[in-house]
Length: 224
Ligand code: C5P
Image (cartoon, rainbow, N blue to C red; front, side, top):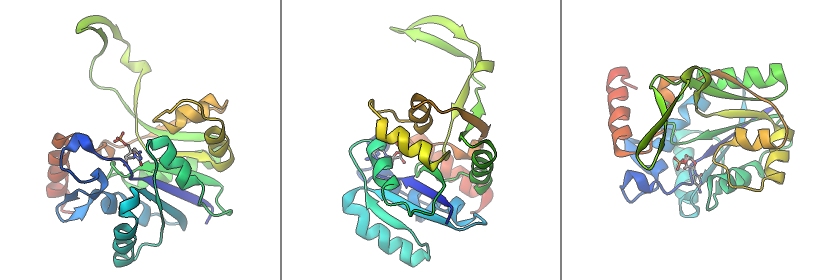
């Protein structure tokens, strides 16, 4: 395959407060991780899929994938998201030219977003990330006191999958000093431009208990 997808699912998910790593929390009978893979399963071209999970989850995840008929390499993650991504990148096959990094916590990202990112990376020769316009008024706040309002037309909310030419992403990870949670920030720090494509509202990240309710609502409406 010429496209590689690294799905990171090695976070602890303590903010959900369920005592299970977040990616393994079930929503209507299927785990967040399994659901996040639906977008990848829907892609028209073959991809090399790498899934990064907590070390104790490697065996059960492999079993889940076999049962689902999904071919993927499963590897153990690290203590930070950045380390988990690096461990995933390390096992991509040589044929891969474009790499997408996706948060398993975004369980409902449509396949179309993956396709837009791949198309933009190929057309531009550099990174591409999905974004949404910011609809709330945004203000700087310090010690609970209001500062200035920030012009929201210059802001965007960043989602995943974030896609890059493999060489640029690998260079960025090889040179990475700080621990950044955003792949585009690393690639830009390594000197490469990154452009944006349209994200999708259903690509929200499941972080807090409220997000699980939102996920349930989405499933009920779409019956997926
Ligand atoms: O914690 P947060 O929701 O920001 O994590 C974003 C994604 O990165 C999640 O899908 C999580 O599983 C993953 N992650 C990881 N390894 C870590 C921390 C987070 O794969 N050490």
